[in-house]
Image 1 (cartoon, rainbow, N blue to C red):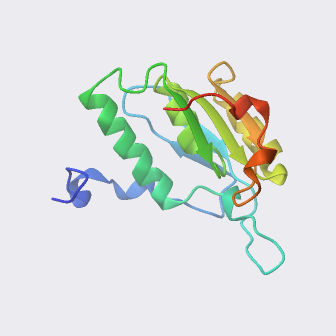
Image 2 (cartoon, helix red, strand yellow):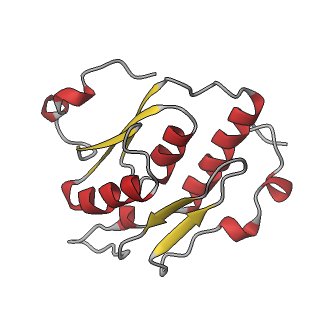
Length: 151
């Protein structure tokens, strides 16, 4: 047993590990419609960083943990305001919106088309939005849409 309150071997089905060469990633929700996110081309060099263009295994583990929390308390995320910094493809933010949160996704400008596609693909436009913000950049550059309290 670890700090999350579950045993990984029994909890995480190996079919959920990610495939960075696939153009799509489907996350199977326990009690709802699947989340389907488009992935971009993974590339990480000294000059190019497209690591956010794919779903990573840690996002899948976090998604399952969040679903477990909802199973314990169905209204835990309902109406909460959530910001995800460095959202990549948007899997976690899209999941949070499906679990009832109002979500603002943030990432670099070059990720905008992919994230917008994934928001639309999963029909969460009314609960999930996207603004450009790069990790480490000046907080004064944050758009007005982020000037609200987040839970």
